[in-house]
Length: 394
Image (cartoon, rainbow, N blue to C red; front, side, top):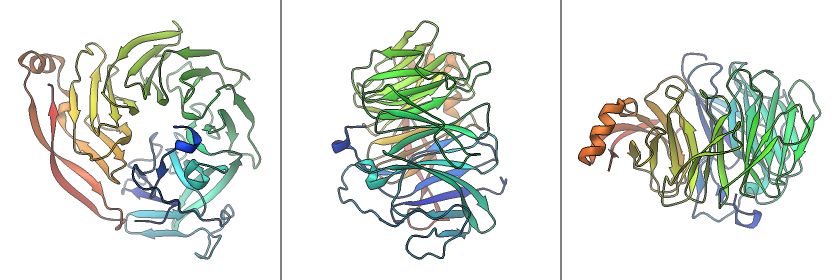
């Protein structure tokens, strides 16, 4: 495995919580694929449900704009094959997201001591010919767990942290944050900036079982959404429907909310286990996917939520993060505590409504074999493909 605190990126040729004492230990590097410049995508670090040994590095962070030699306290940037790696001593990554404006620019939310204790750091990274360059870094008094870029200002982003606050940052300024929003009473684990035109809203999900709506220009939340009965792990805006967002929770439900109605529209008992992640399909406003502790991914059509429209199996530990591709309707990726990132390539994600209804009526269990992409934890340029079955319908 890579040393804790390493950040690894894969580039194609296109140029492109649990309470503090209960937080899980992330192990290994953040791995992100950048298929095209300006891609708005994010991934989280691999975690282990069983590993309990905390390995940290007390060395200080590298200075922005200066490439280290690999000595203690420096930044070791390596460019080998198609991978670029940045070593960040003493920090463990929780979230990463590419800028929607600047090609290759990446924001990473990180924490000391696996997020159990200590401070957090927001890292702004740029690729260069020799590897990766630390453009700027900002420290915060608690671990940072998620990050989202502004959709109307290339320099502005928002993070959330273990002290229940959100922070507004400007990468054009060396100091920060510009503003702090503190209303949640427990860790804030998810934050997302609306992508639809005419809206500049941020939604946050917390372990206090509430979702809050924010306007970054206003110093307090606009609305608080209640209904979940356990920790909220994921909140994400619909890329199609204004004022609509989804949330995933430890109460085993996926919920769809309407900002205008200030309440929940749909409650889906999506799994019989905690749901750790959800995402909207960028090409179908009715299609979402959830990833859960039961090791499965399930697709949901909001027009008929009685049963999932597909189920993807194969992970052997809880699924921590799932994302639809912003470029291909039939591609999604997931990362798990089993130390694998899997890319699902299959046309069944875009089955017609008629075909899905047919599968539902005849109650068939269709097994289809599809390539899944395993990213090797020890060889940065290796991609291993295996055929593993998944099922559609029940």
